[in-house]
Amino acid sequence: MAAPGQILAVLMAGGQNRRYGSHKALATVGGVPMIDRGLETLDRVCPEAVIIANDRGPYEHTGRDIRPDKRPGMGALGGILSALGWAADVGCEGALVLACDMPFVPPELLAELVRRAEPSGVTVAESDGPRGIEPLCAVYGTDCLSYIEQALDRDERAVVSFFPDVPVQILDRATVAEFGRPERMFFNVNRPDERKLAEELL
Image (cartoon, rainbow, N blue to C red):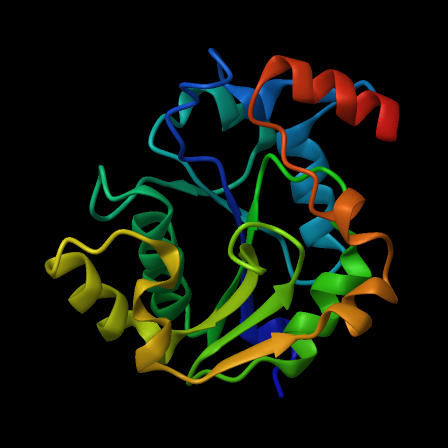
């Protein structure tokens, strides 16, 4: 079991935003940029959150520490590698990872993931999404670092590509549902029309 102070909270804002057409993290939901919504959520779980982003300029207004991907062009898994490397650098046991385009994830759910986390593996929420889990709403232990490196060396870029190599603890859907409706909590804003849907959900 992990304590919040042992986990580095990381907001992932490093995507290329092809589908959105601009920096979607700066798009507002309820009048608040998603980057700020995500940071506020993470701050309620762990000490001050940080940002993974390859283009730091748009996010410097947050005043947060920002690092780029250690291995650019490797997608979300490359971002998780960077988050875990950062966690190891500051002496944390793992990283709580949240995608910036998921504006409705409640801090209570993230706190439960942190509470259950172990440095040896992954603690992830179950959902009705395509993978059945939400790998960008999860805690990754620093022991996963070498396995992620190996997956990327094999050019396996799917976030779950290294999961068979480590212990994976899934917060089951019934438990997840105690914190809210999964279809709302894990709503993902990839395109401008989805931002409008997010406003309706709000």
